[in-house]
Amino acid sequence: MTSFDEQNTVVEDTQNIKCPSCGGNTEYDPETLGLKCPFCGHEMPIEATFDHHVELDFNEAGNNLQHLWNEEKRVFSCGNCGAESVLDAHVVADFCSFCGSSHITVTDQDAGIQPGLLIPFQVSNEQAQAKFKEWIKGHFFAPNTLKKTYRLNKISGAYLPYWTYDSQTSSQYVVRVGNYYYVTETRTVYEDGKARQVTEQVRKIRWHQESGNYREFFDDILIKASHTVEPKLLQKVQPFQLTSLTDYKVEYMSGFLAERYSVSLQQGFSKAKDIMTRGIVNGIERSVAGDIVEVASLSTDYKDITYKHILLPIWISSFHFKEKIYQFIVNGQTGKVSGNYPLSAMKITSLVISILIVIFIVYLFIDS
Image (cartoon, rainbow, N blue to C red; front, side, top):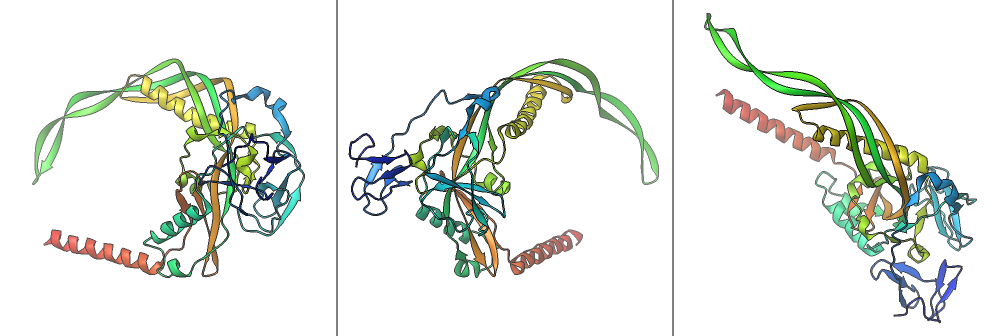
């Protein structure tokens, strides 16, 4: 195996790394975590590094704008779903990897914030397809014919854009605090036409108001910076292990596409603040003594806000079944699968009927 710093490695504009053995363009290989030539099999390792100073000042974001990719990359825009994909300049794209549409055009590269970190693919194309086949076989309510007659479309490896945010928060709050107490009450009940007195303990709530200050630091609030993949699908393949983040290097992009962010840094922070607010409310409710704590008002200051622009790996594809298309994704780090699939009306109906029969039998047994 050959390392990058050896003299016989040819680097073209830091984008396409030529194979020193045959001169072909190398591609990133998830199985070896390095570059591999698809023509002769020659391998070259990538030195994984991590910049501990990668956190950027949110208020200085305007100074970090630049062309995201150099001339060796082209941006393809989908007229159907709006996704903007970044691919090597020599790649010809004839369909959108996110929705399958053929309505794609080459667009100009606008200035933006360059990715600072990424999680390299650790699941190969072949492994992703194997994971999908295991997943599709595991659905009881899918039609029996699905496993034998589906047609799998091309599976593409894509880096999805995300923002992460850090912030020190300081919140002024007012809460309503309720504490339980019990009183003895007597009431009249009637049994067989006769009245009798019943004494019992009844729970009451005594309310009062408190105010105070709550501080909490939030680290790496993760916000998806695109609208292409269904949020429900992405949620089901998470989490990503962010401890595996490494410095962004174009070598990891070789042979894969990356989506440009469509959620701005400011829009992402608004979503991050919603998550922080929920965390702050939960923290206040835990810190105030009382049986019931309800936040009545809240005012939060956000300081020392920093962010990162990162890329996370997924395999994305779809399959055809009875003239319908179903999308699925595979976590490119963990291999976890999520997707849409057809349901068998016959299996669902049979289950409902079986449940109703069981309920009816139980009812007859209890009634007897």
